[in-house]
Amino acid sequence: MKILSRKLLHQLSFKQAIRRCTYSTGKVSDFGQPTSASHPQDVVWQGLIAGVDAALEMFKAEEAYPVSKLDKILPNMIKRSSKLFHNKLTATPTYTDLETFQNAAHVGKVSDLSIFTHELRWVKSPSELKLMKESAAIACQALLQTMLHSKTYPHEGMLSSKVEYECRMRGAQRMAFNPVVGGGPNASVIHYSRNDQKIKDGDLVLMDVGCELHGYCSDLTRTWSPCGSFSSIQEELYDLILQTNKECIRLCRPGASIRQIHNYSVELLCKGLKEIGILKRDAFRLYHQLNPTSIGHYLGMDVHDCSMISYDRPLKPGVVITIEPGIYVPSSFDGPERYQGTGIRIEDEVLITETGCEVLTGSMPKEIKHIESLLNNYSYTKGMEAATV
Ligand SMILES: [Mn+2]
Image 1 (cartoon, rainbow, N blue to C red):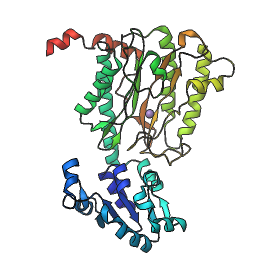
Image 2: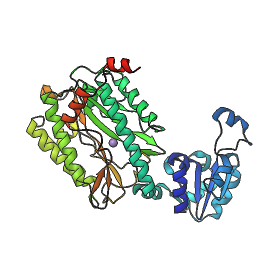
Image 3: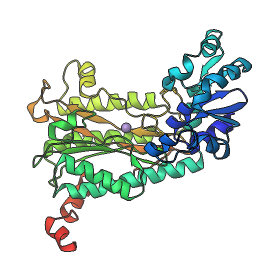
Image 4: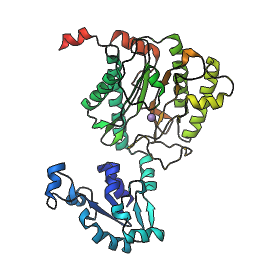
């Protein structure tokens, strides 16, 4: 069953697979969408769908039936099964309301499938890693193009659409999440998504982007100054975040855990912020106001992948995590005025290997001197674009 569910998850996106399948011990049965023959209207509205036949032929279910027959067939199957797996998070009343399902749950026959799928998803196979690397490469190339674009078009909305265009032109099916494009003080809003403001000259922009390639997500953040030069105050904070990013990546290896790396990042950032003068007394409590996020998360078929797996679990080769130290100083922050309204995050994707790690987003520049050089020497100008049209 393990192998079969893995195959299924590879061929269907996770959410589709889990929503559509109920697993019984030793057998995979699919209660799929109606076939075109049984409900021609569905094809009119939705186009061709896989249907019951593909569940048998392509997804290798042992039995498959249209949803319309669910209440006739499923109760008997539940009665015959010694164990029943389903996804608790995406459960629907279509089957959880069945009396037989409720009886099975009552006697402890029902278990959450996610415990198993998250284990399977945590360590990536070579073919999954190929897709993870491609997805990361697409996001890097797209963000680089967007960075170059930002000098001429310093507008959150234009940068958001540019990065999506560049991802999809490189083969990504969709974005993994709505891009975060925060200019100036908007960068201090961690999941800012309005993306509708012009970026003031001299302000930083923070872009957190990721795309989805055949079900595998990328997740990458850079912060830069679209005008092509960082101020000394921006540089001071940026350097602290960059050093923390590099130090934490150095810790990524088999046996380390996200929690350990997180705790180390809090130490480094607290120390650095005290030295800069943003944090004074009561540093630890105030630190969490400036950065309430974790240093990273697991990455894979979902952006925040494998939620059933603890951040205390020792990492293994084949696991992909993000390392994303940041600082988010709201405009209202009770501290030195010069840092108010600043947000900086530098996020990389890290694959744990036998000997340490590989940074999958390493091709995207993060050194200030590289970013400034790119923006000042290679960014588009309106004139150049016009000349190539
Ligand atoms: Mn992330």
